[in-house]
Amino acid sequence: MSLKVYNTIARDKEPFQPLRPGRVGMYVCGVTVYDECHLGHARVYVAFDVVKRYLEYKGYAVTYVRNVTDVDDKIIEKARSLGQTDLVAATREITAKYFESFKLHMRELGVGEPDVEPRATDHIGEIIRIVEGLVAKGFAYELGGDVYFAVAKCPQYGKLSKRHLDDLLAGARVDVDDRKRSPMDFALWKKAKEGEPSWPSPWGAGRPGWHIECSAMSSKYLGEQFDIHGGGQDLVFPHHENEIAQSECYSGKQFVKYWMHNGFVTVNKEKMSKSLGNFFAMKDILKQYRGPVVRIFLLSKHYRSPIDFCDEELREAQKNIERIENCIGVVQERIAAVPAEPAAAPAAQKSAAIAEFEAAMDDDFNTARALAAVFQLMSDLNVSMIKATDAAHLRQGLRDMQTILGVLGIRAGGLHIEKVPAGESASADGLDAIAAKAELAHDDIVALIKMRNGARKAKEWKTADRIRDELQRRKIVLRDEKDGTSYIKQ
Image (tube, rainbow, N blue to C red; front, side, top):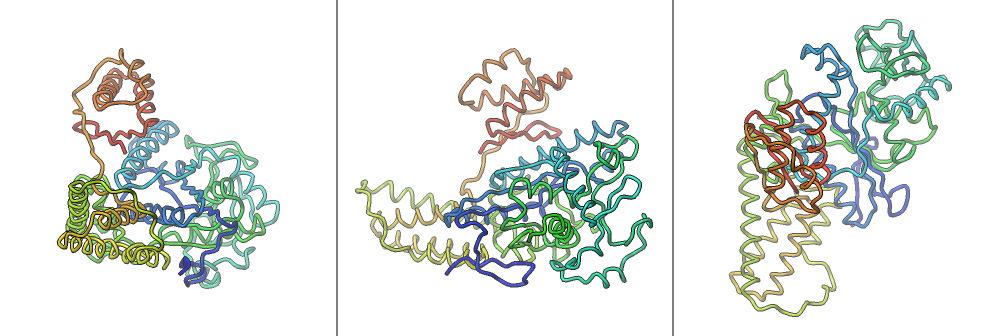
């Protein structure tokens, strides 16, 4: 069976055929870094992490781009809510803090780094160029420093969400800016307000709208046409609809071939939201459950289906991780107890477990069915051990399990997290000597964290930032908490 992908724009599964043979360009909307990431974010990035892993397993060369929105209304509102007067400096601090936290949580969940992780503020030039092009072609217009996309100029507007413009206009509320030609027109460029982060442009100082950021960043790294665009179901309208409109009107080409969207996370059968008070930040969830537990929970349902978050489901996921870890441990012990054998020739055909796994994943990345193949393989291995089957059979079964778990990104055993108490600090006298080492031992990492604590206490911010950057370079991520600093190393 060849790979089939459910395409939101077609509302059907379609055979996967990338635009360039053997190569896949994939863009997934990243976080807006103004607050702690939550379970909804985790579901998106775990789902598309598996998509990338399986495409690579199938032999494709994948370029995965996941952006960072680091200028936005929500970020500025956050800075204002904290009573900050210097909004430019405050937004930088807020985005740095929450981006660092996001990266740590993704590591704990086993989510791999994207190939490119562009920030909106680093792509203002590309954004302005597209907005200028849309204005020149008559698809956008300026109003006193603001620039809007003219939705009525785009005949196919609504093709992703299956919404008709007339219906949207009939249901539209009166917009705060009644100067617009239509209430459905959306901002491409926003005139700067006093004190806000801004950049010079042909229309005066301002900043980009949210939708145009993704069009600019995706096209820069993947071209004006690419294979997969992903995100949560809540982004279908208006975000992805607007991306299509502005991108295709600018380039005159089909923007994306396959649109993929994951389902909502519910909490006790209700949609997760801050207004309902059932909003769970990943930092709180990961204090109770290891990253692999949360990951296997998220993969236990097909990515397009809603998934209900509750303690009972998480406890079941924890049991499943423990079952996997126990099975691997027992099989490894049994194999170790048997004298080594010459390496066997590669199997002439795929095992039943691998064949079932591939059939599941070829059916629109059905991870729930793929996990069922893991548990069936575990059952077969248990039977083999009871029957004292030869070690070669156990080795093959273990290899199959590790292959499947690797593609699903499930680390049996998880990551070890250490914490350095907040009160433990040291001078940075030995910083250069530690930084010069090729590898850092646990004691070195702890020493650096204590030096950073000391630097922060003394308000030596350059030293503190240098230590953090040195640790990040070595793929060691820090998480500052009230009682200390945790570090995690993959």
